Amino acid sequence: MTMKISLSDAHALVRDTMMRCNVSQANAASVATALVTAEASGQGGHGFRRVPAYSAQARAGKVDGHATPVLERTAPGVLRIDAQYGFAYPALDLMMDHLPDMAQRQGIAIAAIYKSHHAGVMGLTVERLAEQGLAAMMFANAPAAMAAWGGRRPMFGTNPIAFGIPVGDAGDPIIIDLALSKVARGKIMAAKQKGVEIPDDWAFDPEGNPTTDPVKALDGTMVPAGGVKGAALAMMVELLAAGLTGAQFGHQSSSLFDDKGKPPALGQMIIAIDPVATGGAGVVDHLAAIANEIASEEGVRLPGRRGKLARLEAEAEGIEIEDDVMAAIKAII
Image (cartoon, rainbow, N blue to C red):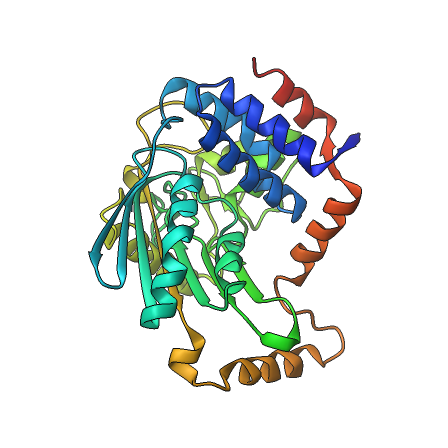
């Protein structure tokens, strides 16, 4: 069963819950915006179902709910942001205050975030940059959940990649957001919470065997997208998001799903590019032309449009929340 609430009520629900769990008002609002927007976009694994784990971690001090991210300009085109073991979202908000202007002035700019936490739906972050006329790429590492190719030991996270680009008159930006495991780990977490099985090609148990049990899957390793190619890309993201930022590697990080252990201290790398600087004055029309050409084929939908439409619908009609999820949130006192 589900119930429907407005986006404003959903935001207040998440914000107030986080504030009861030793999170500052500003940070709680940032977290609430991210989780509610994720839920409204149809990304439930990064939405309301994260509230219990986030709240428990803030209470336990695994994430510092009162942290204020610190920004340092280490080079003309580089921001280095210390998330101070707090939530990633305030650090990403701070990035948004500075990176677009840097990229528009210089043609390209990079933000390196460390001592961070769960990056959520990264497509929403690159979309914010694309809506300001910038092409953007984002890389994030996560606690180890996937083995290096040929191994069984969890070494890399699902290590998502996101890309956004404006397409002018062709409509909303193209947004690509994908985990390098076959599915996002949040889907397995959601299956565990619902008490349902998962497909047998999503994950391996700790012995390296395919499993339909989400509990064994969370204790084992994820199947990489595209086999050896996905495993190689996960390594690339690990080196970009943790190696180059100075963040903790996935195999060193504690889980994002419980309140045990030290802060995960993860990393994110965001690259913003001014298309006019790289492609000239007519680049926006150029991008619109290829977007329209791709979309002209019957059955093709440009990535990112479905989530945007879902958010528009949620703004008008409210957002559905499952009864068990609401009960779990209301139980946090």
